[in-house]
Length: 283
View 1 (cartoon, one colour):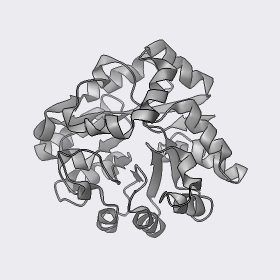
View 2 (cartoon, rainbow, N blue to C red; view 1 turned 45 degrees about the vertical axis):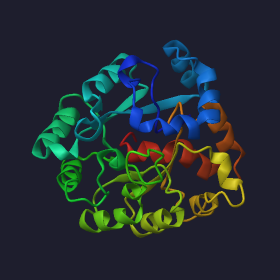
View 3 (cartoon, rainbow, N blue to C red; view 1 turned 30 degrees about the vertical axis):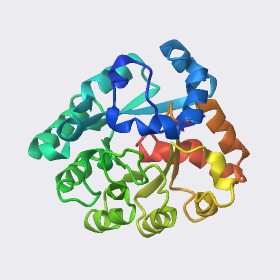
């Protein structure tokens, strides 16, 4: 049984043009090609793929980039997809922090009325640092609502925004101010992997999302991902959450990667299912 913490279904509501992310097609060309070959853009094949790998749940996420890039995957579209394909699919809300109190109200509506289970903030797409005070009302509302937040903490490949917006060290200040906030920091910090490990080690409510990266690279010398295997198999074993960010990473192949890692069996179960289940409040 597994939980894929990040996926994008092949349906129109999730497949709008994103010119600011055009470079991702180059960076992920091989991996994305392999993933799309598994499904070929067909919703039925996508759903069957998750059935075949024994997915208990799959997390899909909204994004509201109205202010910066005029782009939106609406909370309503995410909620509707999850309703149509219940109970496997779980939705996270997306709001635009630049909208101030309106974003806070939208988050509350998404959770209380639409049934979404968390908040997704891709800070580099908002052109805001993780610790920007425009984010703080949303962090506080997540605590009030009892939902977790997904925060992008890694390099991004968009030349239309800054790489520095996702630096994991900035999350440390947020956690000092909001120690109750439940965070999944994903992708897992490259090229600041040790920074993210340090932040997670310091703050017990920070989880590391092994998302949008083939897990096999954790065993490749010099890749920069090796420390995730070391710490994720020991002191941070309860804080590692796996996700593909499909179609950036192929699902069956990524599951095989996890199964091939030199992890203790009990730790492997945590990475693939138990940690995400706890983080999402499914236990």
